Length: 140
Image: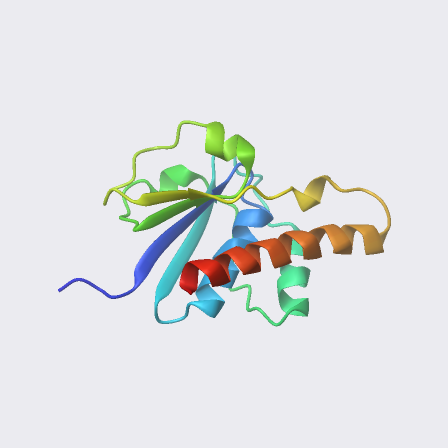
């Protein structure tokens, strides 16, 4: 019997910010209908603390994310693969089982913003709200 839950993989290059936030948003907003994971082509090896802070500030459970390679997910079957950075969208992704549908949500990298705490918070908030809007559209 096939599960009614849609399995989603969110890809980014570093898997430290945007894909982590999208994973948490999908899991929180789509609880029971969607299950998301995130990974990167060249994982940073850490989750940016501002990603976790931003999710928590907006009432989203970040779960227990870790930065990991998309190779860890290569054997898993997905219904949908979403790239959230332009670099990952241009890379040759591994083939994932299940012939997943593919989407690209171009999202600026908030980790590249430098400046005051307020400027960095604003960059993470901008990415958060853009991703939240896309997730809500997906689930509509």
